Amino acid sequence: MRIPMKVDYGVRALVDLALRPDGNRPVRTADIAGRQSIPEPYLDQVLTTLNKFGFIRSRRGPQGGHILARPASQITLDEVVATLEGRSALDCIEDMAECTLAAGCAQRLIWKDVEDAVHQVLTTTTVGDLAERQGSILQIQTSKA
Image 1 (tube, rainbow, N blue to C red):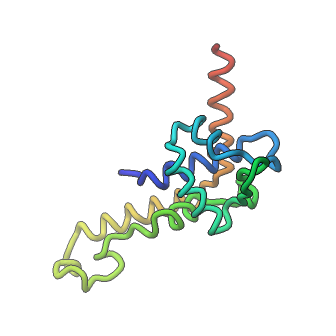
Image 2 (image 1 turned 60 degrees about the horizontal axis):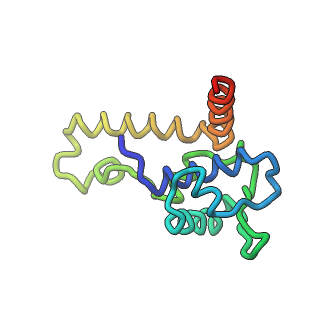
């Protein structure tokens, strides 16, 4: 399965914000980009979208930056994916008229099952869950160093 770059970068940025010890202090785009190895101009576009749809709050200026607009535990990956990439359903799953073989196609049922399973994982996983996992990984790495 291929994860679109925009989704990968958006989720990484949200997790980065969730991991900041002072969640009320804005984090600069350049700082997130540096920590996450994301090109800053592209990240700026992603953050603009996340701000527009209420995932983060952004402030311009010397004291500006980005903060989460709501708790990380209330932001599901399904919401983030839908916002940044849209729904990824195959045409024949959404509209059988798109494919002349859809009515008798065994593949269609498998792809529907796959899509349902992915949707289930994305709706039950939050940015907070990922931040917690990432925090654990960072602690392990720090204790080994």
